[in-house]
Image (cartoon, rainbow, N blue to C red; front, top):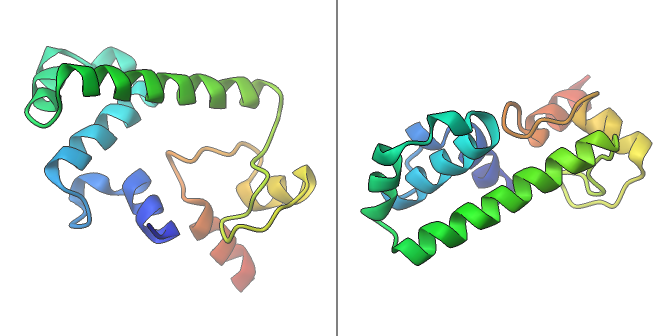
Length: 120
């Protein structure tokens, strides 16, 4: 999987041709878990059930929930990713410069920001 595919999965999965219907509903579910959990309803669970077993839905929900909590926790510590989009290990100061004052991966891809900054 490439960084471009990851960014597309975060930013444009609904309109992307790179993802299967099963992947798209899982990505939508994970996005809602992090941004608007109150919008997760029976209809979404029914849609997930078209592609996944009950056990897989529970596993997906637990994994996403853990990661949403993990990132929320690190946000309270003002902790930034240790790696750049190209995989380099960086200190917190450089990571803040790359990812912005508040890194929000759901809204803007790190690659796009890093590419724009490199062009300046």
